[in-house]
Length: 288
Length: 288
Image 1 (cartoon, rainbow over the protein chains, first blue to last red):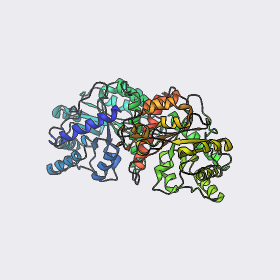
Image 2 (image 1 turned 45 degrees about the vertical axis):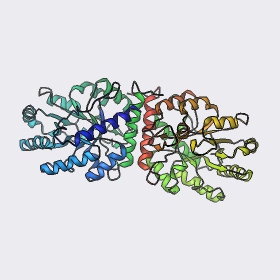
Image 3 (image 1 turned 90 degrees about the horizontal axis):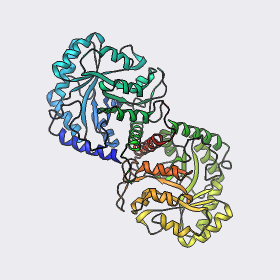
Image 4 (image 1 turned 180 degrees about the vertical axis):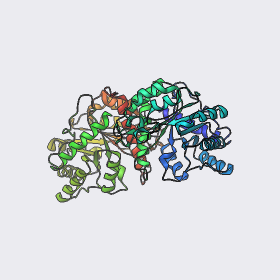
């Protein structure tokens, strides 16, 4: 059960780190965690949006129950205008639950002021990774900002629902000539709903994928809906193989958008499925 | 996601079968389900004891939520003195939930009368597999009964907690000279708690293992407690490999004994973990 041990180890490391406050946590790559040989470079996390109907306390309780230790912070749990005291209290609450807030977002940005606000917010929160959905005309301004802050900026694809960044190639075309710190928060479910191949896209764009929304969907079309991770049309074992092949070292953050007012069973099943796939296919997995 | 498809198929088959009543279901081997090449011979089920604090309706709701379709029937959901009408109503309720009750038990037996009662009950329920814990002096009588009924009788090992059948070898020694229809309900958790190796024992006693209590435990000692399937000391991927190697064709029925008054998240995580391991290691698993 190497996965479990590595997660416990990460959780322990996280607590130790988080208690010294946001400054020590100021990394989007979570470079503080160390990996024994054979352990996975990627981590399992939760996308904050999964908990849109819950308080932070309730969200952390579900993460504790399912033994998940990384959270992408959504504004409904930590508003963009939070005071330093509120941010400190937020981090202390996460630390008590053994959770690291590793990034903020997704944050939609329609003006340069909103881009400014997002970067200033991330800095105050103490993370160096922003998940964003900026209007395309703002990308040159985002480019300036990542240089100014030395933050990474990951653009989220949203499938056929909206015109802005429906899939990976649309993001690639928008950012290919920009700073390498601008990349993807790759939503594998929306990618598949758009008719694309998440395993192939993960390989193609790996160098600029900074965050992943882990999910499965019921159909490779606009009608596809999020489902439990093992019950959809995406081949998760193949996706995990590719995570290792491209040496992805970010978070795979479960965005569970089914039964959103009563999601715990679906979250737990999905977390279990992901850990089962990871454990069963890890090269050094067998101990007995 | 071959597992999911095979489970859905089984569920469909189950509904069709169950609606024609107990007579058509009168098999402990669930031989009615058909397997496409490459699909697993074993099925995921639930041990009734998992739901000791819940009504049948609540248990079926949790099975529906977690997409599990086989149930080992415990007496608190269907008492041994149930009338034919109660048994019919029970099967109809299971059928509506897409669930097959594939066996009864565990049933403890301290007298020949209790052995008689168990066999008569199983016959009325319409299953040909009894999970039992008979006093050892009753085994010659059980031997007569399996010949009389042509039922299989699976003895449950209970680890270091009780003297009767602590592990697989104790059952083997008790039954090796008896009818081949007397075998094991192999509790892999109690086996490990007793200091034994469930993967090796599965291989050694495969021919007489008719049912499995699927679980993991926190330690290989009496102090070990049931935990989520991916979080314990038993190497589940190795166990699944062995299930296939020995061509086990019974049920792996999750007996989840943690948080028994609020078990859904742990059940869901365990079910997800098992399906993830199965999907990731199935020979013909890759579709993309």
